[in-house]
Image (tube, rainbow, N blue to C red):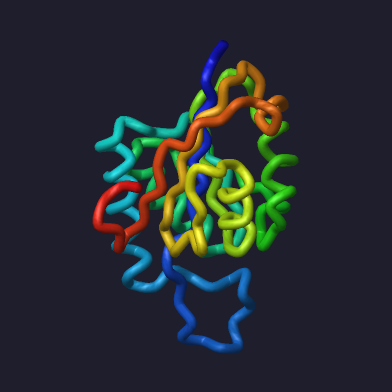
Length: 169
């Protein structure tokens, strides 16, 4: 039996400087641009690097994915954009996950709240998360050979980390 690792990553802090800007088009702010490479480096330190990156197409999620991909030496043109991940419900994550090619053992999904927090809480009872903060990363491992079986597979919570954390949970 193979293990599949899923990393749920909330986009970095975005800018609210233009209140008339459409939510989909909001860019990262200065703090977001600093937090994204820092969190990517933390994953490198853990030895956890995704083989596949899937992102919401919203500007702030795409930008976060690209910044982190650069740190991981992952080609930005290989990032898959999944329309359904923009402001989705927890159940939508499972639909996206079941379509992942089984050759990938570690996958990162970049998305938004409240869906990302709801989905993280759905996946484990070991930890309860009130809010996945911006650039927060939730890691979980599933005992399965097939992503389509991810929901039913036995899972093991790996970690929850975010920029202002004192250390890994």
